[in-house]
Length: 140
Image (cartoon, rainbow, N blue to C red; front, side, top):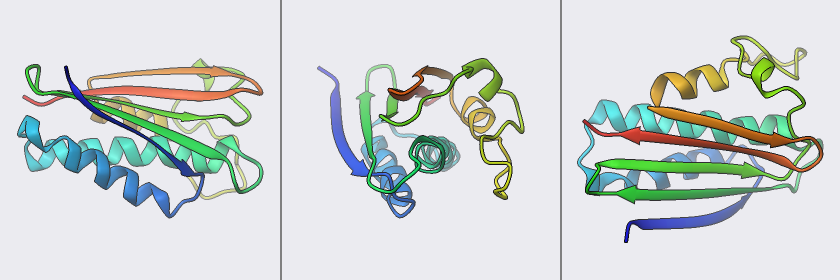
């Protein structure tokens, strides 16, 4: 059986650092390089930040983080789920510079960054029900 953890946290920007650190620490049995850990932390940060910034119009939403380590395959799989507004067009949202908050200074590069720093990424979303971003990182 692979080791895993599953946690819930408030949709609050302060929890992004905790989420990335938890995933990084949990991945250590796979013996990742410093660069691989930094890539993983960046991807997790982007997924959690997307949920915080875009999923909920008000404070108090929930983000679920699931992380599973496969030591044999030297990989980690992560899912970040929100139960917010959902994404009407996932393919459009995955385009570089796309944002639902053009008044914000954010770059609209979240999904592009996740795709760059992981080996696999999928986005499932339903309007009014939420979004799940699933990613996998293989340590070489």
